[in-house]
Image (cartoon, rainbow, N blue to C red; front, top):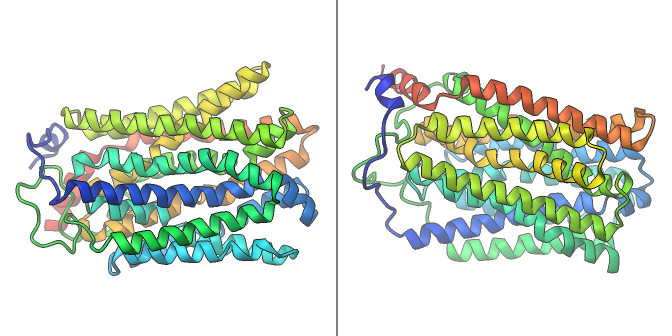
Length: 442
C-alpha cells in the first residue's frame, strides 16, 4: 500500500465490534473512575496548599519545589511500567498502581516532617505516572482503532470530572474537618476502586496482543502487527509532534493543579471556598473541551477525514488557541474577563491527551503499544517537573504577586504556541504508519 493510499484511506463501512460492547463500556466506565480518583489525588495538594504550607512553614518557592517533587519519578515510572505492560496483564498493573498511590497518601494524615512530605509526594507521583498511558493501553484492547477516540476521551474526561467533583468536596473537608482528612479521603477512594476493578474485570479484551484469533475483517488503518525499532517510532514526525503537544498541555495542567486555587486566593481575592468552586468551574470547562473534542475527532475519522486532520491538526489548533487565550488572559485588565480567558486557555489543551495517545496507538505495533504509550506519557509529563517550580520561582522574583502569576502564565502561553507549530508541521500518522510498516516487513 502506498503512502498516498494510506493518507486517503476511509474506514471500513462496518467496523468490527468487540464480542461484548456492554463489557467494553463497563471497562471504560471503571477506567474513567480510575482517572477521576487519580486526579482527585493530584488536586488535593493544590486545594490544601495554603493551610498545608502554613503547617510546614513553606514559602512560594518551597511549595513549588514540593509540588514539582511529585513529578520527580513520574516520567521514569511511566516509561518503566509502560515497557512492563508489554509482558504483564494491564488489569493487574492497574490494581498495583492504585494500591501504591492510595497507601502513599497515608503519611500525610500525621506527618510534620518536610522530608516525609517530599517522600510521600515522590512515591505518589511514581505510582500515578504510568496511570494514563496504562489505562489507555487497557482501553485500546476493547475497541478497534476508528472507534477508540470517544472512549479515550471519556477516559481523559475522568481527569476533569475528578477535579471538578474533588474541588468543592475536598474543599469542604479541608474547611470543616482539616486538610489531613482530605488526603485520607482520596486514599480510601483508591482502595475501593481496586476492589471493584478486581471483581468486575477478568480479561484483557479482544484487541490486545494476547487475543487470539484477531478480529475478522481488520480495519485498513489497524496498528502495525510486526515489531519495529522503538527509535524509528519515537523519531517519526507523528511521535515528535504529539509529544510536543502533550508536553505543552501538561505544562499548563501542572500549573493548574498546583497553583490555580492559590492563584485565585492570592491574586484574585477568592476565599478558600470560592477558590474551590472556581476551580471546579475551570475543570468543567476542561471537561467540555475533552468530551467535545473526542466526539468531533471520532466523527471526523468515521466520516473519512484522514487522522492527520481529525486527530493531528485538531490537537494543534486546540493547543495554539489555548496559548493565545492564556496570553490574552494576562493582558486583559478585567478580573472576570481575565479569569474566563485563563480558564479557556488552560482548559483547551487538556483535550489533546486522549488524542495524542490514540495517535501513538495508531502508528505503534500492538505488541509494543504499552511501551510506546508509557514512554509517550513519560516524556510529555516531564513538563510537570518544570512547571510548578518555574511558577514558584517567578513569584519569588517578581515585584508583586500579580506580576509573578502573569509572568508564569505568559510562559505557559509561549510553550503552547511553540508546541502547536511543531505539531502542525510534523504530525502525519498515515505517512508514518506506512513507513513503519515498510520497515517492520523488510
